[in-house]
Each structure stands twice: as C-alpha cells, then as structure tokens.
Image (cartoon, rainbow, N blue to C red; front, side):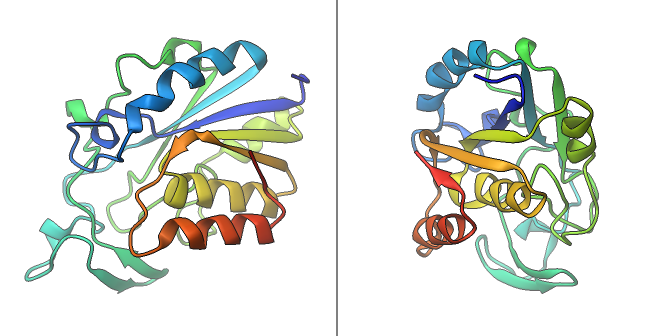
Length: 200
C-alpha cells in the first residue's frame, strides 16, 4: 500500500464485540483480517469510544426513556444507547485479540458528556474536531481505508467526514460488521456510495 494511505480501525472494543454491552453481531470476526491488513500500511490509527458514565447518549441518563429511542439533541437526532465504553471499565478496552500495539495513533472520542461522537474526525455537531485530520495531514496521508465497528454508524460517519475533508476513502465491508437498526445499514451504504466512498 502507498505511504500516502492510512488504515483507520474503528472502535474494535469489548463492548462492541460478543458479550459486550452494545455487541455488534459477529464483531470479533473482523479482528483477524484487520490485524493481517496492518502490515500493508505505514500509518495505522485506532479510534476508541471513550464515554463518561453520565453521557447523554445513554438511555439510562434519561428518565422514562428506553434503549434505542431517538431524542432531539442540540446537534440533531440522537439514538439512546445502552451504557457502553465507559472509560476506566473493561468494556472500553480494545478487544484483547486486536493488535493495538501496532497503532501509531489512538483517537478517543465521545468523552464530552453533552455530545456523542460517531466519527473519528468530528463530534456529532460536525464542527468539533478530534485532531485526526491534522495528524493525517502531517503524515502526508491522502487516502484512508476504513474497517471496524459498526459499519452503519461509526464507520459510516468517519467515511463521510473523510470524503468531506477530501480524502480518497475506501471501506472494506468484509472487515466491518453492522448493527442494522431499523434499516440503518442500507441507508448507510447508500449515503457512502452517494459521497463516492468506495465499498469493497
């Protein structure tokens, strides 16, 4: 792979794998292929959901709300999730089989209690940056390859932001798994194709 390409591994954490608080079906199945891909890249980034316990995206923090309800936040619609990836807890750690020690940068996101962050580039307000764009630019990266969890949420949002920032963007669908909440997978795939994300 060209030195101008980066591999971005999205949220391969315990809570998103089997037995986790917000398990994505088949989540751990992607780990071996993701690890194998790492040797092809000079720049490897891992993103990590990193929430406080009082995060507003947790249904438990809204009286009378149920998991997977949608509320209107200041930045738009917000799904209310089960409590997950709370920093300092095992669920927030990378899956033990992921070769996390091969990462050059780890981007933690969602640590502000009042705003969620699906994308590895921006919080969900689409304006608060994580710093990933600046890092990739200093590494002279022009193209990104995305893998991870979940395809229809954090992978999709990262891919759309990457295109918006001008990166050539490829999503390796076989190294992703989806939640598919009320048709979210089909909507995500259409949105990515419309944005000229390459799906493989």
